[in-house]
Amino acid sequence: MMKTYTLILTTILSLFTILSCNNDDESQQVQSDNQPIVGKWHLISKKAGMGDAITFLPNEVVWEFKNGNEIIRTINMEINNTVLALLHPYHVSGSQNYYLDEVEDRVTFDLDYMPEGQNSLTYPFRIESDTLILGEQSSYDASFIYKFAKD
Image 1 (tube, rainbow, N blue to C red):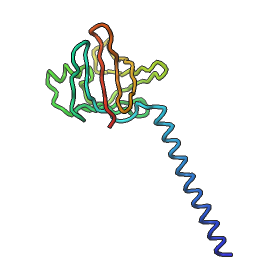
Image 2 (cartoon, rainbow, N blue to C red; image 1 turned 180 degrees about the vertical axis):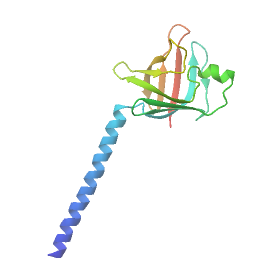
Image 3 (tube, one colour; image 1 turned 30 degrees about the vertical axis):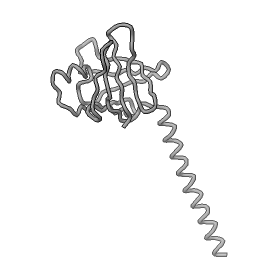
Image 4 (spheres, rainbow, N blue to C red; image 1 turned 45 degrees about the horizontal axis):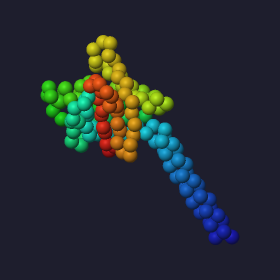
């Protein structure tokens, strides 16, 4: 009788543990699928207009998209006039807000440190494998393309 009771109790506890783990995994997967942009990304390259892309070393420039529409930008390189020009308007480390429009595949960044009149910028975005691409090539020189690798 005692062996049967112990076996039943062990089976119930094991089943509860297995089911609890599965529920957590599913909820985390749903969150990740709903916000594919969430996570740490390091800048690979920036292309301006029709010119060549400028490349960056891993972790020199890191953007971390967090749940709750916060982005943290970290610049791990010396900011001089050349780097400032390359990264402008994203040359400031710190946190800002971002907003995803997943229907239009666009992301808007609040830039509260910019002069009045230009407090946000919007880019189309797409994710290909582990590469985040912001911006698009257009037929005129005013376009920018940022490429990031997922950390």
